[in-house]
Image (cartoon, rainbow, N blue to C red; front, side, top):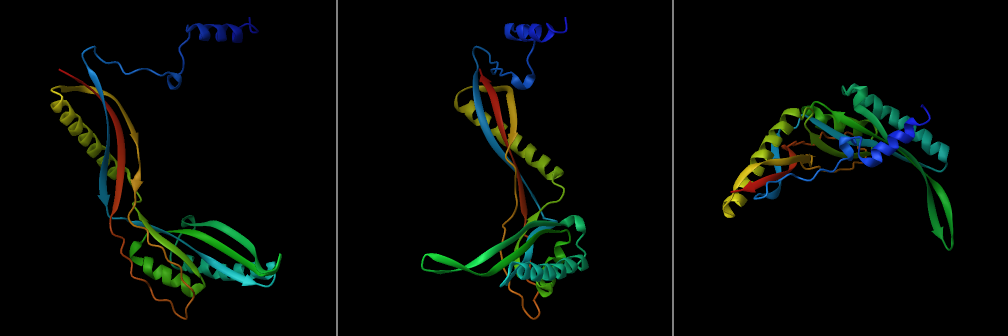
Length: 240
């Protein structure tokens, strides 16, 4: 009996005697004979003041030998990491994003010659006190960081804002369906299906790269406003 179980199951499935998983089913939209379907896409938005910022920072060093380039980079990067910790950035908010070593070439004729090596180490940093962001960047450059990219701003807890955007998207979809129905001399009977897509859209992302100075100034920072969005695909049934 145990040997025949897989064969019996496969036979019943092929004959349609066993239900398939809901993910595997493709059910057509059920619509009344006198109805018609309308598909609408609507994007709802919610605006919030950002409360976190992310930036990428690191060190690029060059030396004649690969070991020397990596050693110089490690020494300088240790100072940068210590500066981050001293600025109150938690370990969970510092993540290494890349460690690279590349040869540098001089091209003469058909044979390139290695003239040295370039090492780089980059970390992604989350700053949870936006008010201190300019000071943090200045501190990084003072500590030896010669690469800074960002910042980008975001909202840490998006739950409430995204729910607000969802409600906005539903209202927009209903209003749009009502316009179509009115133009056709019909009415909106019901929502047949609804699906969510889209995502959030943060504010502008300025980019910058800095060389080390004697004393780096704290750059002025303006976080602006973040827009979070949700897109809904809604199918309505229209009829008389």
